[in-house]
Amino acid sequence: MPEPTLIDERNIKTEVETFFKHILINLPLSPQYAEFRVVPQDIPDCNMGKKAINKYLLQCKEKNIIPFSKTEVEYDNDLKIFIPGSIDIENNVSRLKYDDEKSYLKIIKNILNAQLSRGKPHTMHIEIGIPAEEGFKSFGEILYDELLNKGYVIEYGDIWLTSRHSNQHYEKGYVPVSTMTLSMKDSKYSLDLNLRKNDTEIYDTDINGWFANLTEIYKK
Image (cartoon, rainbow, N blue to C red; front, side, top):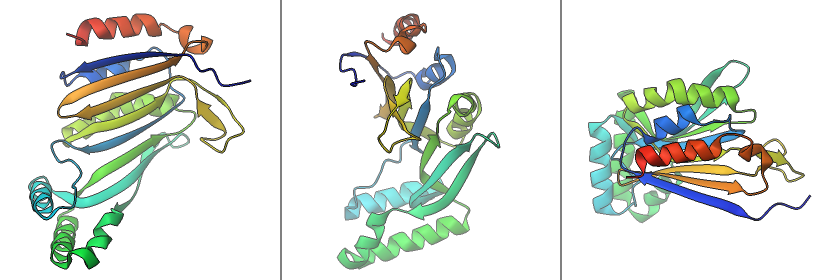
């Protein structure tokens, strides 16, 4: 069956901090798959310029963040728990060893000091694989609040509302059909809905009523 092409696109933007929580808790269906990029609030990625590096390192030190660090977190459907991976350092740091040795040494020193102080990772990539029902519920009801309490925010989220089997090598033989994207930039929260118009599975839910209610509350 060919992939449907007609898409019903909808968007809401707001500065209200409860926006993402409301979406995660009140979505009228269980998503098939979800992944989130989570970062400390007010500490964006560093562009590797000398002034930017110094500011970034100071911000990380103030909040006990390991500079340029990242980790993968995956929901285990058997154990019913989110499992973190090892903390790695972004690849662009190693390039500074040859381009700007002074900045490189300063970064390495700050990374070591943060690790010795049991610092937190800068970027977490959280994945909730198929089937995502229990993991998504756990994320919305428990982990999301814990992340907020630790000073983290969702920078980006990709959520498959529905999916279909495919011969393509993708997520366990599935590809997305209707999707939802969450993003945050400059304290503005955004929701983008991309609904396939012939996706009966999505329109059998109360997605229209849910979106209308969300619009009434947040799109002011």
